[in-house]
Image 1 (tube, rainbow, N blue to C red):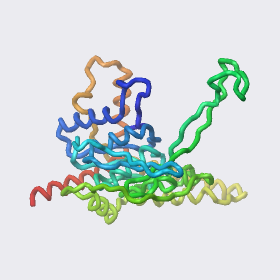
Image 2 (image 1 turned 90 degrees about the horizontal axis):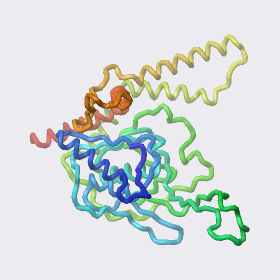
Image 3 (image 1 turned 135 degrees about the horizontal axis):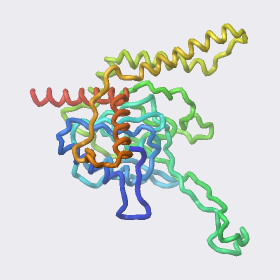
Image 4 (image 1 turned 45 degrees about the vertical axis):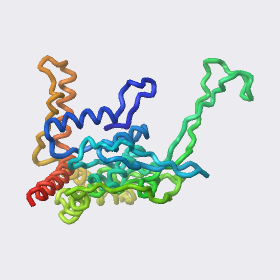
Length: 337
């Protein structure tokens, strides 16, 4: 999911919660044993859509809290008791997952509904903004009488902060995944916490909610991967740590020594790229309703083929599939017992 979208101009337009629900129904028809929701680099979107989408996977209850300055907190709730999908669930995030993505991941984590997988933390945007146009609606205001075609721009004001159901804000700290996977952008300084003017972290009283109960434990799955670290991921982290040190490195003015250092640096980048390649591609295919017809337009076929190819070589999806498989194994063991 690239964003939590909603067509504000058309009540019957696309809504991400409805589109995701349709995709889940397709997967259930094929009797899938686990679902992964990929929110990597998802910058956010509609708050009501987040609430509805989280409601597809939990029973009714609060999803997040919002507070304006000087006012009591308001709780956004899922009021639908039905659950569309109750099987193993994982949510993928990275340091560019922000705002609505963090609300969704935090809700799944706080309810212990699934396992959150990703880099050390998400972006950390826990604030709500409103865009206010500066162009006057009427002439003869204190601004004067602007040309009808003149656009004076707009100003964006931060009006609220939102909080997890456990009371903690996603501001600054973001969401810490249950299973941390080293990311190639880990050391780039662009998170909210890297902004010197960012609002501080704080918390509210915990909302009244009931964690998910199941024979499948998200804690067990998370602890398994903490106690059984991947050798490849360990090598990736070691290489990333090495490259991160280059950011503040002093370079020698000796040309021979400088060239040797650059050679070693290029080798490290090459090693990193090799580590990100899976030794064996995953088998990835479309859901049956999405299989393209033989006479489908070539550009659409090419786009779909490239997408499947990209997924089949994604080491992060591969690791998340392993998390899902652990949860499936838990469920099978519970049934056997």
